[in-house]
Structure formats: C-alpha cells, structure tokens
Image (tube, rainbow, N blue to C red; front, side, top):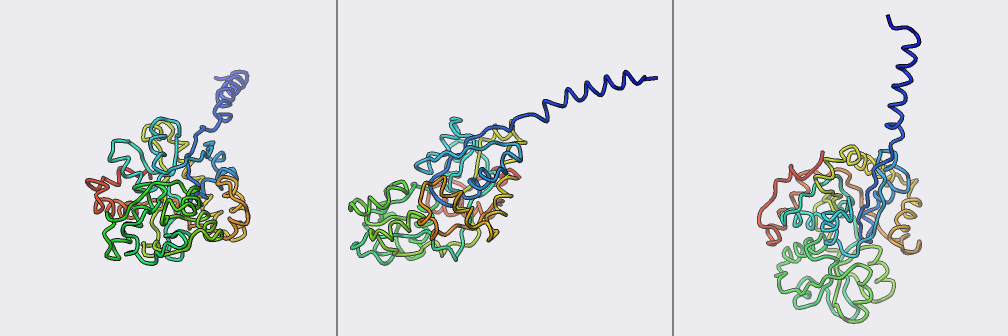
Length: 313
C-alpha cells in the first residue's frame, strides 16, 4: 500500500514539474507591416492583449515596401508578416516555403478607401488616360498593382503601355506635388491626405469592380517556423479572430482608430475619415485562388500553385 507520506511527496513532485509549464513565457515574434489600415486586427490584438492571452508575444514592425516582407521573413528578421496575396504567391513560386495563417482586410464594393489618385492638372479621368503616364504603386506585383492592372484590362486598356513606378505610401503625396508621378494607386489614410492637400484628385475608385471578400493581405510565416511553434501559430490565429470581432463592434470604433494611429503614425483627424476594410480572419482556397488566376493571366506566375498546401487550417 502507498502511505500518506508517499502520496504527499508524489503530489509535491508533480506540482514542481508542472510549474515551468504554467510559467512558460509567450513565444516572441516580430510582425512586418506597411502603413495601411488593413493591418488593423494585428494592432488590435497587440494592444488588447489577445496575442499574449493565446501564448504569442507579437511586436509589429513597419516595413517601407510590401515586397520586402517575404525576404525579411525568410531571413528571420521577421517571423510573421502581412504581404499582399500577389507578393506572397510570387515569393512561393520563387522558392520560399511560406504559409498563410490568417488574412487582414477584405475587399468590399462599399469601400472607397483606395483608388487611382491623379496629380492636379494631369487631366487623367479614364483608364485610357493612363496610357503613357507614370503611375506610382506601393509595390510592383502587390495587391494594388495587380488589381489596378486587372481593372485597366477590364476597361480595354493594355496595361503594358502604362509606366508603373514603385513608391512607398508615405511618398505618394510628395511625388505628385513634385511632378515626378502623374498619378498614384494609393489607399487611406494617405489618399485622404493627398486629397485634403489639393495635390491630387480621385480619378477612379477602381477597386469597387473587385469581388467582395478577397484578401487584401495575408498574414504568413515560414513553414518550418510554424511547425516548430505550432501552439504559437494557432495562438496568432486565435488572437486575430478575437481582434476581428473587436473591430466590427461599433462601440469599439474610437479605440480601433487609436490602435491604428499608434502604428501608422497619423494624427486622429486624418484617421477619423479613413475607411477601414472589413476583417478577413480566415483565408480560403477560392479567395486566394482569385489572385492566383489574375497573376497567371498577367504573367506574374508561371502556374497556379497547390493552394491547399499553402494555408494553415
């Protein structure tokens, strides 16, 4: 028989061995983002404590250009990041073994928070007027670039006759004012700043032609990092899901904008008028496939990848 002293000793031993598990610190990870509101759920999850609650300590880090995110993840300068779907798919085809954990913002026909903004006096009013012009995009092959080229094609315009120049969002207003660019494909809150300054005007809310519910961003990591840190990866997904619920609750609107403003460094009066995309915490094969199809058509991808292998469910 086991006596009381043995039972007490065994219990104490078990308690001692379980303490490190309960006290284990959250996995630390740096998340790369660009200065747009579609990363709202990341900022919310960080500020509201959802990430730490689920066992991952995420530090957002601003990156000037979206296409820089996958190489930074690959080099482990970032562990997580939010490339646009097109940037992600190009990186995968280029040999990077990255996978999607969640999505950021989603397209909506009600959204007028992005568009083609032309320089005042440029005379650009239609898709045809873009031929021969210098148009800035915040990433060659990224979301705005690919979607805008799809719109040009839908309007009967050969997008190869448009001169696209890569320019980070914060530079758009200055490049228009200085005459270096004829127009920019841009998004809030930078679009609102350009319009309020008089440097440009909206030539087209071209994105309203896109189907609803497409991811504007995908939140990704290296496959081997996810395999090594599966609990933290699932924690990231859970944190984003909680943040998405917070985002769509009207009573949180002021806090949402405060959280966004903290990370994209814009004053409250600018953020007050900026539209915020609906969240897309779960990315599916069909919505990622829409982007893959566009990219194959635009010769940005050679073939459509096995999408099921790219999404962590």
